[in-house]
Image (cartoon, rainbow, N blue to C red; front, side, top):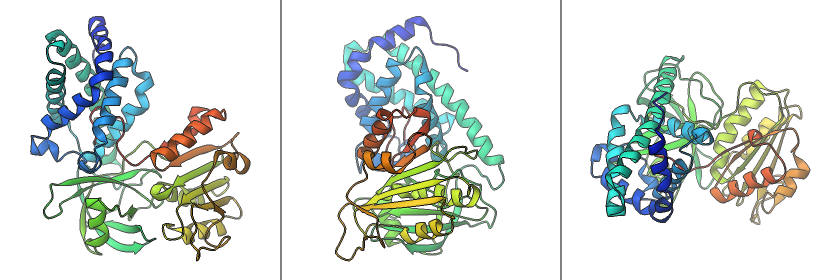
Length: 404
């Protein structure tokens, strides 16, 4: 563990909370402007969270404010710190990259706050930054080591070839990936993601995370990708990548996953393309935990956007009644048949979950858009569920200090 922060540093950082509340977004926007002047550092980051959506500066401002508020004891931020470390490992961020972020952050604080950012304030924030950075560097070193030494593991980027490309719906396509070197692959934890480095003509190098949609095995991974109208990488995968195309892939990462030792029923709830990690979990439940009840509840717009429905029905059919699946179509088409293609019209609701899933004794795994997650995470908590039984993942930038 790094040396504890001094009382004066803690007091100075906490004193900046009002300034961060007022100017945090301007600071993070300026920080990224400064940092991305260095092309090598810019290319480490997932630019879809910057240029394509612009959401990362806001998420980072929230994270910095949370850090300042909790500077006296970081236990409340432990899950966020683990999430950051996992994202960094996926992006292959190394200790030598941290000084660039420190310089950009402190420079941005000075640029935005002007004379209010005294040398004393900047010194306190520099110490606070490196305190957290040292925690992350140590955790990331451990993760890198574990990934590299595990059977089928590797470090950095490994070439994978697309072995199969399969259209799952109007908007989602699956890609089965096998290592170009012919070796084994690391067993991922169901729910984790892979990070990709794309070299697309006419673009800066792109980094993207895609959840693994298959159960762990020794030979391959499957990802199932939604084609986003403005998504550079997803459009390239759908429109240009073919069987045989080689992709650069980092080892599986992520803190949202199905634990190996399961003692309670599992409820999986997804919206839209949030189904991808759930399919990995559902396959795993069918293969490794056939004795435990599993409930899969999925919501999508209609049959045109519904992916992997036949595959889910197959898993249910061979589960001897231990897997139950319910599909909601928000606005069914005329050709969508109730009882064949979907089970319920409309949106998934907390009332329905309360009546049809075991709220009192199950673990709940949630994945979908932010409004979807806000609704169900808060709904489950209000229903009295312990936080340790609510697990969730969203697609997009997390509230991170050094983020993708």
